[in-house]
Image (cartoon, rainbow, N blue to C red; front, top):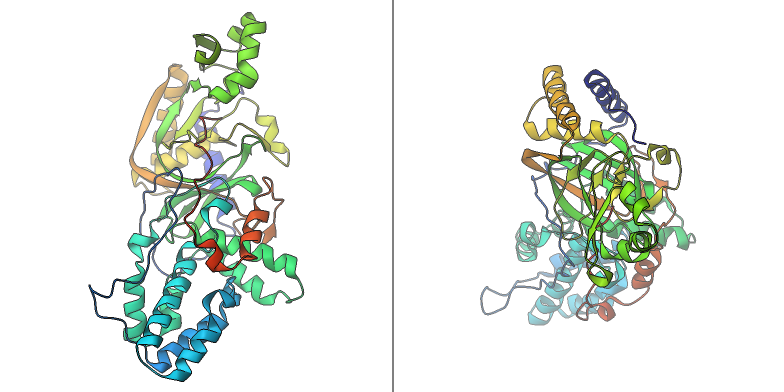
Length: 452
């Protein structure tokens, strides 16, 4: 049975406590002010193919020997950032520098700068090796490589121009610092750090001044404002055979008493056989259906046994993945917590709904009157008993990530089990030459069915 609905005062008290605990170890402010973003999921995301600007549209970049030497130094030290120096042909660049300035040096240095800049901005791992990855990375629009190249050559500061393309999240900086401390002989650890550094490059550099970030291997989701984590919640993620993907979306509102439209995979494997074997039990569990066989459609009505609980965060995406309540709250005490069909069952979902409502409203987080008003409205909707939507005035970016080494919202890095065995494919891609990975990417995995 579902747990009783908490009172308004209890919800407000929980929210205040959660935010106070989360702010005891806030993430440091980013190096630069983030740009608000409203990401949308893509299926699958296309790999960046940005190249140097065509020679017939702009003057050819001119590389002095000093600038090219700076690029060579950046390439030779790029291992500190988790990339492979040999990918960027340091021997060929060194020879071209020795041969003197001119067309050959211009062409080679431009090509190598572009390759290195692209990998720092977008990641070196090909789409096919990223697993279930459906993130809309807008960095190619906000951080174009032709501008980065022009700035590098005009400023004669190649390293700074490249650094501006890197992720700004505190976890990325922590991973680089850990990599610098790791002995060269610790190859397994180095591979793991390199893998997680690259995963940050797969996300937009700016996640938004207000955003939600879930880390699947950690079974946690955090709410972040202006570079600080203000609340954290345990989550239940997808089972190994119904994996939660990496994706980006936007929270657009709250749905209370949400019905669940079952995906065909669950109908075939679980609910369809139950309907055929024992329709009375299926009805008792809230299932209603139309059609038969391959045309069978099933919806679970809201109620005490509903898989989505009493509330979900609406975040439209092609995979129907979202954050939602659950009637079985005892599972949050377990670790690991991989029981869902892909969606993120969220601890204290009422509290999260209030917090996101407060964030999008523009009210101060410490405004008790605003908290009480929002909590009262939400509780009234739930007590009314009908399916209802409470749309946000402004959407809030949501990201689902997969990091097996992360700070867990604090300062010290922690290592988490590789739940879906996704590290191996990334590590294997780093063992290959970059040139061998530049073939057109294969189509990623099929679109995920609606899940819970």
